[in-house]
Image (tube, rainbow, N blue to C red):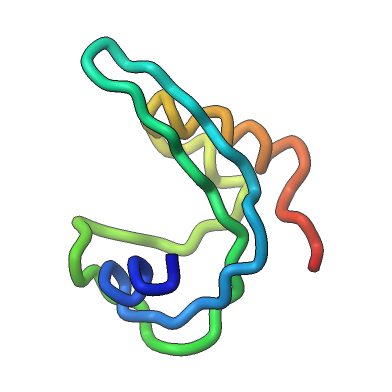
Length: 85
């Protein structure tokens, strides 16, 4: 996860825990989505190997059209918020 975030956004993180695991079946593919809680360590984020990114408040999640596999994670964030470590 740390390597992926450096490659995609150019920032360093510390992975703390798994937040949710989603197994989702689309018509042509099945995916296993692992969502982690991570702490920002350093770096200025930029879209290196991704189309775009943005920091948002959890309350803003409903403004975005998310993929079906992401809905379970969105709902958990809206209901419970981020865990405190």
